[in-house]
Amino acid sequence: MKQFLFAVCMALVVPFASADSKSPGIHVTVSNIKEAKGKMAWALFAAKDGFPNKRENSVQHGFWDIEGSTSAAEGGEILKAIYLIENVADGEYALSVYQDLDLNQKMKSNWLGIPKEPVGVSLNPKVRMGPPRYDDSKFDFKGSISLDIKLHH
Image (cartoon, rainbow, N blue to C red; front, side, top):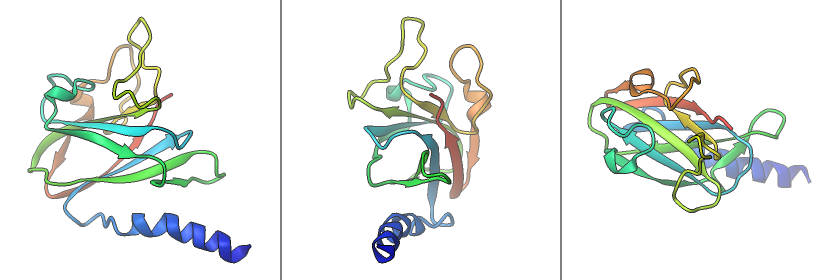
């Protein structure tokens, strides 16, 4: 049984170890994932137009797998996942993510526009009325950076 658990732990750790934070790109750790379901949608913005949820205004966007990309945090209940965005020119950016639980490639929200799916942005600014602002979420990128984004449910 111990060997089985060790093998499972190694299978989870080895893919993350290969994403060296010194390698080029934006290394993103998304935490507070409550279930390994759906996909993690992401959009990288170089300006405030459309931030945080209009993918068509982003410089890059896509979907990451959640299942197989997550590892249990302390206590085993909350998951985190590590991803890499490559081929990014030096500059100022802000990153937004949401967990697309139903795989419809659209962030669900209620009639007030409040997200029904877990969301997060770079630099984890304080949650206020309305969507996060680009200026509160922007970061300077020069070759390589590590970001930690906490999902809000």
